[in-house]
Length: 542
Image (tube, rainbow, N blue to C red; front, top):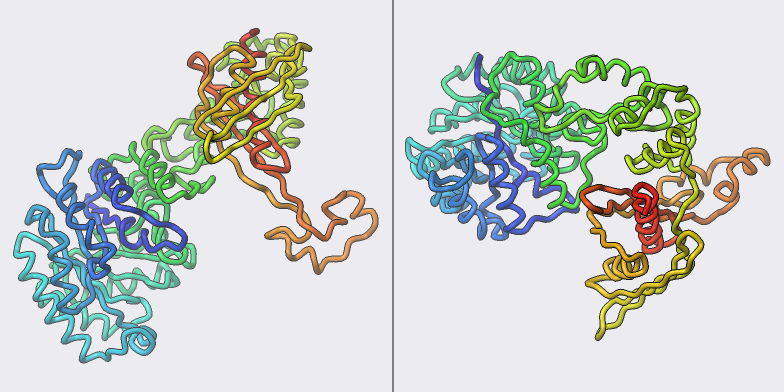
């Protein structure tokens, strides 16, 4: 099978994503993770951008040298326009990498749109610039290094002129030819046809590469079609980062190739994909899409009774990708579509006897899921199981009667709580690094137990007329019965904000979830913490 190389541009094109930023340490973490995953080429930046150049030399040295401690040593690539100054800067940015690990990637726009409205150069000038600067790049990296050339906006470029630019680049020493769909709107079949035309004219003495943007949502499909046509390097970003709607997500491409089994991507350690995605998401402060094909939280999760019955017998009933192959595990969660099979699986996995009728607990699971607008956490499911299987009360044991959290410039945050625990009032005080830390310490003092706030997630949810995303309501007419059914959301002309918080407490090696909902984000988190401690009390019989 032909080997397909992976070219990651998260640190270059991905860094151009609106609303994100990466400092040097961020980029180094990502670069090392890419090397450990087995990526063949890492594009570390655009050297003509002085904000990039300063850290690119260090990145090249840390990941492009055989002295690195990473699992693999990728080729280190620097982007450059086809102008002498860029080419020189590109080489300087990667010269600390080993000679065989240096690549200069040159580009120029060749479509009528880019010639007319971007750089202003015309055909003959472009051909001369390509020849002269690709030749200079080859001289700088020598025979050991590599030179990649891209005709930007290839798919809107006249095909005859596109082939001329590529031939000039090959004649001048380019050994990788990238054919980018810069606007992302080429149909996959047309991309296939263009690659075939280029190969028929230029030949197969070079590696062809696909750099596809996702504006039409076809980036992965177009990339796969390019591979069918002869592309042997795929370019993209982790989590589909990049300009506008981003680049092809190469993790999805690699996973598809693994499943289809027609091309060789065995050098990629796909079991690291999930951790790589989590790292990039944390650094860019972006949430991994819930339904991402490979690393989304729902990708290997089932709740519906019919599906669960199948996957419990054999995961391949609905999961084509083996979860472990991309660093995941199959997860069965309880929610509003769960049936008795799903509930029985949960009970068995948590050592509950479940020989009797489970319809009552199944109905309770569905109602609870609808009420909270989410699948049940493991803690919530256990609390229901304690009631319906073991007969314990569903009543809470801990209620918050009062609290106060204050901060000052001199003394820092301070918290005081008043709790009702099984009918007895308890108070606690605490200080810490922040208001949540102070509140945690106060609750621990009141309860006399220690727990660690393992994780928390909080967000504000806006609903109703006037709220973001609800603008269309302003032009809709509601009848009296509809307004009554909608309640205040239908009647109010203002927006309604609800804060939601989810926390995880670590108590004696067990994880306990707490959920909070309030008008203020702080109060929602405090309620979630109290609910988490309430679960600790109820599930441990404290």
